[in-house]
Image (tube, rainbow, N blue to C red):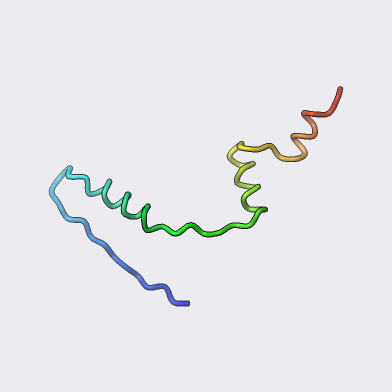
Length: 63
């Protein structure tokens, strides 16, 4: 599979929103990459959305 390079240029003077326009355009062109459940779980743990199983079991264990 060959990827085709595409370039887009934004022209304008000083503070006319070229950076904002380019970032918004890039965000719309980005295609999300599918991930498997293990990668999703690791991301959720890394960003503290869910706890790791070992940590969750330790905090729920009776004392």
